[in-house]
Length: 277
Ligand SMILES: Nc1ncnc2c1ncn2[C@@H]1O[C@H](COP(=O)(O)OP(=O)(O)OP(=O)(O)O)[C@@H](O)[C@H]1O
Ligand SMILES: [Mg+2]
Image 1 (cartoon, helix red, strand yellow):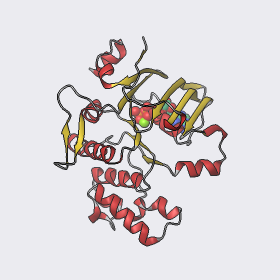
Image 2 (image 1 turned 30 degrees about the vertical axis):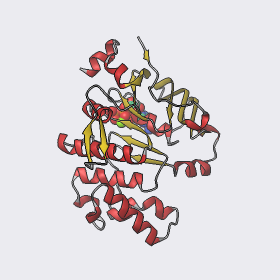
Image 3 (image 1 turned 90 degrees about the horizontal axis):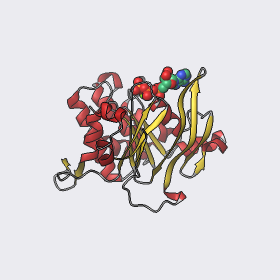
């Protein structure tokens, strides 16, 4: 059974509000379908969490979103632009509005933290002193200013992931894509990363798509907020969930759930019940 619930977000569904639109999208590799006839929308300010078994196509879905992969069928729109109709050069420009935290961080080992975080700004020929200012600001956000001239190999796994987040946010993107940002990290470090993502979300209200293997990360995102008073992450009042956090559950090439936290935890879909356990 497929459970399709509407997000609780209170928005006017104008084209301008639709940051990501998948319309009957299919893709496969070597004759094997991976995503089959997928349709969903992500609205401005929405934080969409994507969960599903390993190999189901979560990373593929993010790569389709930023145009790194092309679908075999269907259309994908980003900020109202149909990716399939765009020239490579325009696609490159559009991608400038997307910040990506790749699975495993994917930093350049031969570059300092400063040059990793400022990589895209340098590509855009931003002046050096401006790069320094923005990189320092982004590193301050992830509490890693002191690592400016270190190399990724000198940092812990958690620190490298925080550098990857700084690199994704340094351009003030309109959309953030997180691919398994806590993958391979221990539980305490994972919590630090999730707290950082919540802080970023509540400080900037950037629209995001976040893939995670860890259900506890997903539920922490849905039930916590950043407080400006204590400058810390705190739980939402009992029974409340973040209204902008919504879920997409993938299984066997299909979307088996599209909706909010409340409907997800109360779903009677056998796959979802089993998955959540
Ligand atoms: N470029 C590619 N060429 C061939 N097959 C690919 C390619 N990218 C992905 N696949 C295949 O598509 C399927 C989905 O891959 P994907 O990386 O999206 O899974 P995932 O849901 O992100 O898994 P995980 O939870 O392990 O990260 C896998 O079977 C994978 O082998
Ligand atoms: Mg993946």
